[in-house]
Amino acid sequence: MSDVQKMLEVKNLRKYFDTSAGTVKSVDDVSFDISKGETLGLVGESGCGKTTAGRTIIRLYEPTEGQIIFNGVDITNMSSRELLPFRKRMQMIFQDPYASLNPRMTVGDIIIEPMIIHKIPKDERKDRMINLLRRVGLNSEHANRYPHEFSGGQRQRVGIARALAVEPEFIICDEPISALDVSIQAQVVNMLEDLQKELGLTYLFIAHDLSMVRHISTRVAVMYLGKIVELAESSELYENPKHPYTRSLLSSIPMPDPIKSDEREIIKLAGEIPSPLNPPTGCNFHTRCQFCKSDCEKLRPLLREISNNHYCACPFA
Image 1 (tube, rainbow, N blue to C red):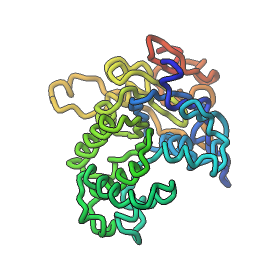
Image 2 (cartoon, rainbow, N blue to C red):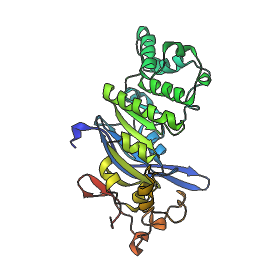
Image 3 (cartoon, helix red, strand yellow):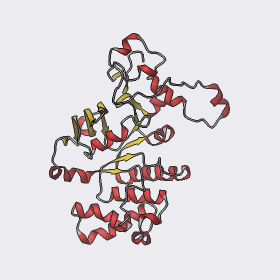
Image 4 (cartoon, rainbow, N blue to C red):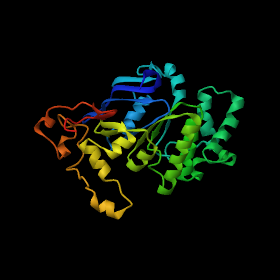
């Protein structure tokens, strides 16, 4: 992958939170890149640091260490004023459609607000807002309603329209379907795919639904306790997982065929996920790994390429 194609480069990113109980290492030395037009899926258990990584990349959280490079420009330490033109090109769809929309604003005003911030000409705003509503499956009559008058799926469509309001190139989708009914989830994902094709968008798709991630992602990164433990093309990762954690995650995906479901091996993890306040020494995963050796408790494995574009942070992969 040449540098010209890379829209986003994340290098050794760390985000730590100081609390009364100690330092929480939410994101701990994470590196990856995303090329223009692709979707990188970021998956892992709740609390592994996926959302924190997304919010740090878009600078809603200030990074503790590392670099965030967008289209060749280092935005890691930019001031809010310097960052403004980059915020226009990078947007976010939030997980909770109930909490992410201002209940005191109409849907039209919610979508127009980012246009005001980024100084879109006033005479263009209303037409653009109506076109965006139609594009996400709503209509112009919805512009004068308030968020509480909509279902969860409709609210998330409003959130997507807001993210598209300033014509971004890159969108971080932070579990955009996890709060929605199953019947609505596929509709929203299909709409995101259609928008990607129409508008040439690039996505970081954060989720814990592994079957949905496989459907939408070009490549998938698996995160555990603040670190990426495996990264590969989507088909390669699902058909040939190497890290014990990835193999366990994939073995838990429900299968529609009861015979195949009974035949496969389900890899159950021992114990609970450790606290990020006090992560294990050596490999973060060794306390739950059935293949653990004595070295795993001492040495921290690096994410290394084990085959073509397939990276894994396990010496026994």
